[in-house]
Image (cartoon, rainbow, N blue to C red; front, side, top):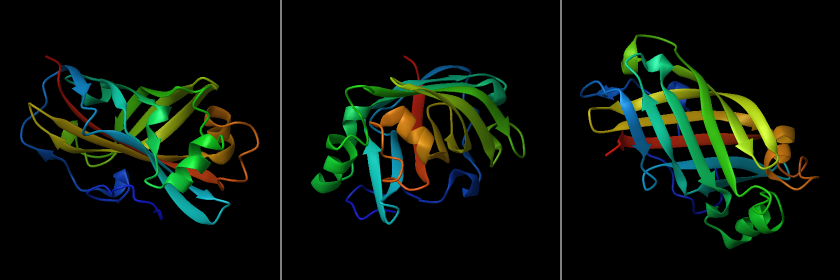
Length: 200
């Protein structure tokens, strides 16, 4: 997606096109903690509407409250905006120093889920999910809907991936200094990868 050095994921396929879950066992209900070393938030924009640039927020933390009924599971995640990198000092300057991501006003981006719906099958074996939630920054909130896939589920680890997009006007309202709508094109792609383990 990018001309930068941000490493690719094992698959760049959108969450709603991924294969079924590798389910060794059903994850037990309770609080699971997001592994910050195996989780991240990526965003993609087209600078000037032409040049694709991908940024990665590395400092992701939060919890997954698993329930016996997966559709009642709640996801809470937050990321430090200062951890954003594109893998290129030039594009880092565009993303942060130029104000596309206003780190001072928005020190973090938070996501809280409000609904989770299986599109097929039952339990974590469902191939497709819809994830509703709220994005929160220092500038405001935004209701969002993402496609979600559980790519691995066991008694020790669960791996989730949510993908979608945010319109440029909303992205700028939440993250940027005013006036960046035309710089980032029509929308900002969002790609959230979570790997979590049971709380100690």
